[in-house]
Amino acid sequence: MNKTPQDNQEPVDVVIMAAGKGTRMKSSLPKVLHRLGGRALVAHVVDTVRRIGARHVVVVTGHGATDVEAALESGAGGRVPLFARQVPQLGTGHAMQQAAPLLPDDGTVVVLSGDVPLIGEATLRALVAQSGGRRLALLTIRVDDPTGYGRIVRAPAAQDGEGEVLAIVEEKDANEAQRAIREIYSGVMAVPAQLLKTWLARLDNKNAQGEYYLTDVVGFATVDGVPVVAHRTDDALQVAGVNSPAQLAALERAYQLRQADALMAQGVRLADPARFDLRGTLACESDVEIDVNCVFEGAVSLGAGVRVGANCVIANARIETGAVIHPFTHIDGEKAGVTVGEGSRIGPFARLRPGARLGAEVHIGNFVEVKNSTLAAGAKANHLAYLGDATVGARVNYGAGSITANYDGANKHRTVIGDDVHVGSNCVLVAPVTIGAGGTVGGGSTVTKSTEPGALTVARARQVSFANWQRPRKATKD
Ligand code: UD1
Ligand code: CA
Image (cartoon, rainbow, N blue to C red; front, side, top):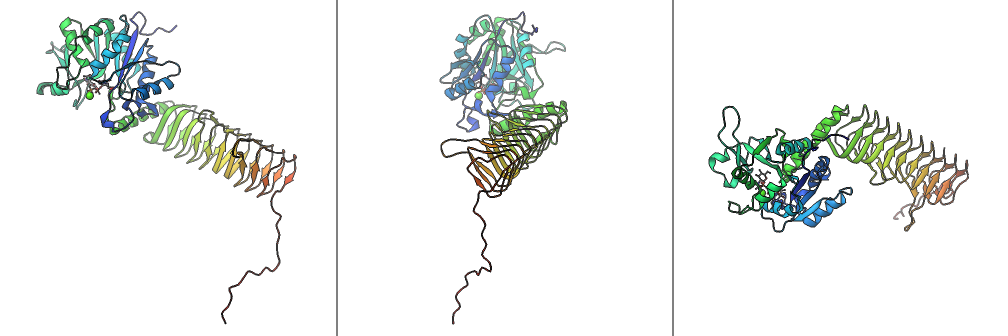
């Protein structure tokens, strides 16, 4: 078994405060459900605390509680957090009072905010270690502009060290000297549950905002002789909160840049890391090239040497070795997934939908849509076509403007196209129908009956010509 920093320590229980309204988002969506990298803010926090091996995860909900709880229940992969409702919301201390009954006495409690999504695993482990079962550990950071944050008030410094932490003073309660302090409280702390509970019981709301401040526990610790340690981070991203659309957008860019950097460190060649968006997971083998303005969603994996052109959106797909996705291609496998075979050429302007399974060296050209269809090696549909619910054999050539009519208004039916079939331009294959291997379908045919292997099928009005045809003329006045 791997030894984790939690060994020989108290179990860790986590409280994620997520009851606040988020007024400045000016949105009907609860703030913690706004998305960063395609995932709800609070879901990022829940993911991270799972990774530190937290015993209980309690989310304090209030504003939009049913939506927040539903989102966490559906996205939890079976591990649903506990919820403590806070109605009305009377401050962070009041939020913690609602969570307290769910916290066993023997644990270390880590307090987090649902709107601070990028807090790191290592930082939390370090903070828990600092708490060590007997101290109050605060995550702090020095910032250029401390406006709006709780200030870390310290005793006068002894010699070269820093003075011990005495209190956190909120901006609205701070005097001028305190406002000048640039070390601020991040909103993250680790504290033994037993101590926390006694302090929560002592909170009052006699302050400038008339709220119960969790941060008042620091003053109680000082009075009770419990050591307070400030664990200072220099990674502003980890403690950055989201309060407004502008902050959300800024954090999104920072997050994307971090993901882009990680991919480039693995050898992925991004044309411009500032124009790259990953809203999920992207696994890349060697020598992958991604041009500008591509968006990857869900789970995507790219084989060795895959090239993705500019302005592609690719979701829930596996692209095999050496395949090229030309610009402006949209691929979304949703739940069924999409696979693009080795050496295939897709796009520009192609659309691959759920259940598209393309073999090796398949060509899908501009304005071609493929849904729930298998194309065997070497099949080509190069222009303006639709393949839905189809099984397409090897080396098939599927002409421009041809479609499978797979839907009769009530049910979907399958079209089977054998190996080496040539389907001319502008054909309608009315499913269920099978085109026998090696067959040819003449352009403009509407095929409603299955055809024999090797046959030429023409299903359209026979051409007639009238010699020396005179078009009607305008009557002349005389
Ligand atoms: C809090 C801290 C401040 C710190 C800052 C860091 C207090 C009193 N102050 O201030 O020292 O610098 O975070 O960002 O704790 N929440 C509830 N219920 C409530 C109030 C808030 O669940 O009644 C949740 C919010 O949804 C949010 C978190 O608690 O996730 C923090 O609340 P917020 O109002 O943003 O705290 P600040 O006033 O910014
Ligand atoms: Ca506030």
